[in-house]
Length: 388
Image (cartoon, rainbow, N blue to C red; front, side, top):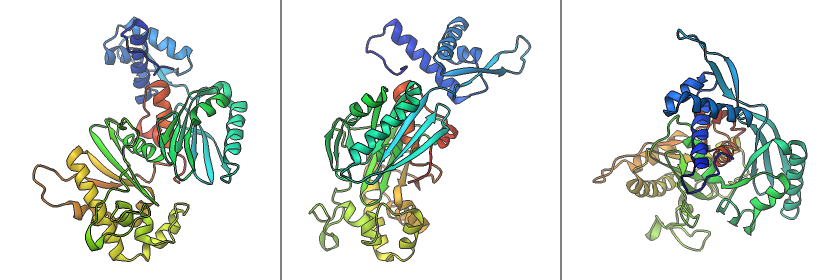
């Protein structure tokens, strides 16, 4: 595990850091990177770079490829990602089913499974699914990324209303079955990680807002998730943004919450469900009341304007089922935020990339937790799977 490190600047920790640097260079330029290229990019000696490459090959993380074009001397051997051995396990847990994928180190999904369950048998079905994966792929599993609705510290599900889980040590439970490290990721955080990965070199803050049956947000900084110390960052759905007679009652019992105006049910009506597919949501959106959509856009814009003034994000991304609301809603949100506010600038606002599927963020989180590297945007899209 290259991302296991200690706080002391020991020889072992320095070598692990150099291994990560070398591996990231191969990930960013597979099939073209060379030992000499790694030495030049890192400032390490040729002998050290060759030693790092040898260790990465021995650990089946990279492989040698064809010889590079001659530059006048001996032709160098190119390096690529070893996609034939290690696997990442991705589990996307939803209230009635789970999507399970085995992902190679180059981002390619090699197998996809889906299990369904009821609330009563969910634990048993998930445990059996993990046992089945371990029986077939156990010696190849590098790490697991488990995406779910609810708050988590990466090890336990602190609270999930949708799953009716409270303080569930899920990572430890799955690790016993898989004999591999497991990281839990909130579903909105996973979406934010995936969107940040669309950039070759993500820089600055990015605000991601998921709008579905509820509303949640996440912030990334230079492509990395920026969580709070109590793992509650992004819980913006029940912040009051509408006041007076316009404030509607929210399901939480308060009035004027962001969700009461801008959640999909508030804008499209009680027919909306997070279980709907894109086509079904589009039908609801086409016949939605324009005034309710405008009220939702206005409430959302207030939250975006305030958060943007604080963070100065490179961009604001709206994801989840709200992407099916179409260009009119997005333009309304942009108009509602586009007013003079001394000292601030207008942050670009867009919908989430439709090519980024539901498993990409959890897969990237698992890869980073195990090896300390990121995929290129192309590799991330390969790991995306279908959109939920």
